[in-house]
Length: 245
Image 1: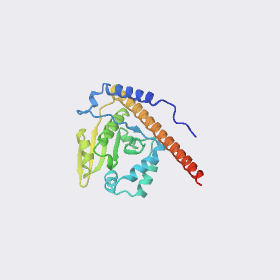
Image 2: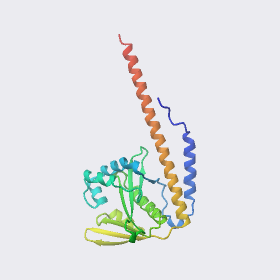
Image 3: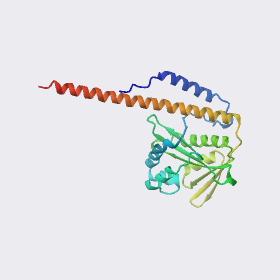
């Protein structure tokens, strides 16, 4: 039987708090919202996260799929979308809960046309039971910072006009919104990257990675503990059976 992770949990938690304190105190006043909120770990996703991305998108209700994709995407349509995600070109970010379930994700798609090399498009989805926690706003702000650091000067958001939440986020950030029937386009001009934005992006990425590793360590420990409990239960049942007349 495998033993649980040997790294003392207290060590990682202390290191994590040091990272949080460092980034919170980092001089990023230009990007800080008026109302400070608790930190939310946003992690960059990779091809190995495709199964979790697929589960997240398939778990969306019909209305949420409609708002995210602009049409009532079926399971058969979502599968090819996930399979075709280009992690080398684009950036996909996500928020995990303590069970390592993807509860919110954003897709920052960079232009494939050289004439629009400094443009990118933003899309986001949040699980219904995690709405109202500001995850959409956090993912948007994270994407803006990352896009700036990648030299993007114009961020586009294509959304249905009825997607009030997304358009509100865009307008609050200063985007120009143009409506054309049932669809809307939001254009947000981004300032050039600064040393603060680059350092903040680097530190937040490191913090999110550490948070993910902590959750993964806890997840592995829970699985190990469940295995031990199953073994003990089996031993007790075997002993009880053996003592029966």
